Amino acid sequence: MRIISANLNGIRSAASKGFFDWLPAQHADVVCVQELKAQAADMRPEFLACHGLSGAFHYAEKKGYSGVGVYTRQPPARIIEGIGVAEFDAEGRYIEADYGHLAVISLYQPSGSSSEERQQAKFRFMEAFFPHLEKLMTSGREIVICGDWNIAHKEIDLKNWKSNQKNSGFLPGERAWMTRLFDELGWVDVYRSLYPEATGEAYTWWSNRGQAWAKNVGWRIDYQIATPGIAARAMSASVYKERRFSDHAPLIVDYDYTP
Image (cartoon, rainbow, N blue to C red):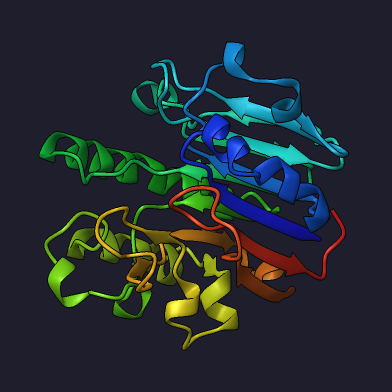
C-alpha cells in the first residue's frame, strides 16, 4: 500500500505546476493533501477524481484558506470531517477515511508563524487534538495520520536549528508536545523509524525567502505518523523533489499492508 502526503499550498496552483499530471504515475492507494485554498465551487473535475482515485474534502469556511482532502482507490466505509472543535473545524484541518480496520487521516495543523495570535491558536489546537490522538490510538484500528504538522521535532529535522529555537515550528513546547505523542501515546514517526539519521534528504518544506530551496535550507514538518502495527510494516519512504508543486514536497511511504 502506497500512501502519499502533500501540502499543495493551493490546489489550483499545484495543478498548474503539474501535480495531477504527476500523480497517476505514482500508483498510490491513498493520497492526503493539505492547504487546498479552495471551496467546493472552485473544484474542477480533475480535482475531484484522478485516474481511479476518488476525493473527499474538508473545506475551510474562509475563502482561499486551509482545507484538506483525501483521495482513495478503494472506497472507505465512511468519511469523517473535523475533530469536533468548532474553531478548527471551520478551518478545514482534518479529514479521515475510515475502512474499519484501517483509517488514513489528512491533517493540516495550524501555523503560528504569522502572528502571536495564530501561535496561540496553534497551541489551542494542539491541546484539543492530543486527547483525540489518544482516542484514535486506543480505537483498535491501524491508523496513519498524514500531513503538515508545522513542527520540526528534533534538531536533525531542520537545517538552521540553532537560530530557530524561538521561532514557531521549533519552539520547545511544540517539540515537547510531539515527543509526548511518541513516548506517551505510542505513535510512530514512520520516516524517522526507517531512516533515523537522515538529514537534508528528509526535509519537506523550504521558505520562499532567499535561496532556501537552492541551498536545501529546509525543515521536515510533513509526516506520516502511525500506530505501531502498520508503522512496523513500512518498507520505504522518500521525499519527492524532482519537480516542485508547492513550497512543500510530497512524502511517499510504501507499506506491506493491504487496505
